[in-house]
Image (cartoon, rainbow, N blue to C red; front, side, top):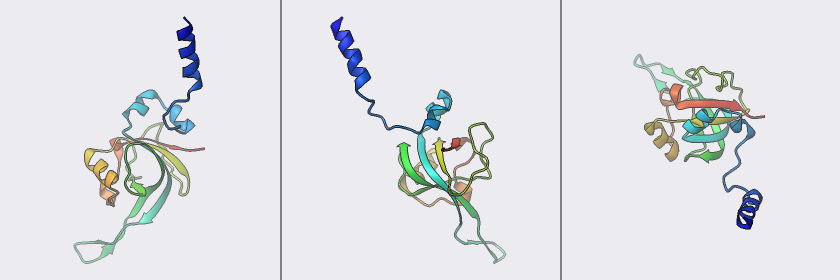
Length: 143
């Protein structure tokens, strides 16, 4: 009996070894949290893409949406930012549709194997290959 009491006291005193995630993470449903293979916090920004040469000889530039990664909680990120196609965000309660430049967000992602390779290596990703739809589980603004 004393062993059980000692064990219980030890479990209450010793903090868990996991990283402390933002409070917004714990406000999300467990089903969403379990789906995420990549969890990061980052600052949203937009930037002009490299030049795109069109078949008629003209040049165009796309507007890229990215998150400057400030902390990685789950998964591996090799670069400084993650590209997200903000015109193809999933519609749902847990995805901010009005992203504001300079604001910090918590991202729960489930990238495809191809996207995950690019993210882990830190490769630049073209606008049309940026994370979208089912690869984005949740984007929540941090307080």
